[in-house]
Image 1 (cartoon, helix red, strand yellow):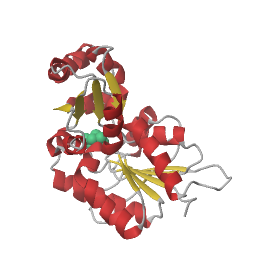
Image 2 (cartoon, helix red, strand yellow):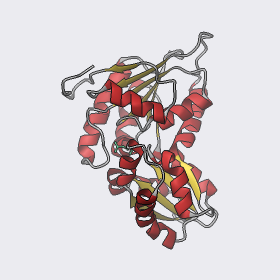
Image 3 (cartoon, protein in one colour):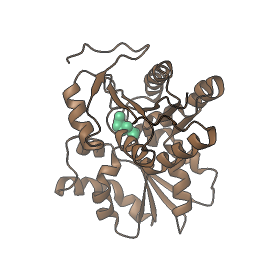
Image 4 (tube, helix red, strand yellow):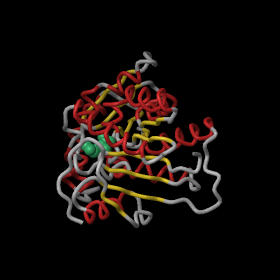
Length: 279
Ligand code: DGL
């Protein structure tokens, strides 16, 4: 069991920022990544539909024998937080790590003045999952803002320039006005915009990336469960996509993760009918 891969799930390629952090912090672990590109983006979709898509892929990962599940997508984490723990950890003993709680924990520790901003997709912000996670620290003041166009910019490869800065100014101005000192990047894609976000917010604001914090949580969970990989052979990496285009997934995936994305497979998930494939 401990030599089985860590199952990482995202709506598409964005979760590869989390996979990157996990591979960096746990270089001996094998990874099986599934991006639900057939149904992405999740951000603008109703939360019930995101939940249905997410659980179908997670069921599939469990069937394929992963030792642990990482929900790398913020929108999917917001939609399935409680369900996933009940379904996989309580019923099957498979630990689940998601991206919201690790980022919230880090933000609570890092904030000096207790004024925290959260940015994410429309689905994540509307679900209020971050507000719920921060509720345990009622002395903090939390200000959330959906930044839906940021995902489009990243997928188009745009990480600077006047159009991005204008949109970033518009999205982030209310958070600046609130005097936040810590900003949670509550979406898989936003670490790739960290430069632009830092430029707009100014040097006094600390950015918290879910990717690094989640990888630290994965590390801790593996050690606590005693399921670190013991096999001396090199680890394996597999990157699967549910959608049509291998080429598009691979192109974007290389940007998010780097050269580890050498082989991409297209897979079907359990219960959701998928469009025809072009391999
Ligand atoms: N992975 C999603 C998230 O972190 C962003 C992309 C999408 O909308 O599917 O919320």
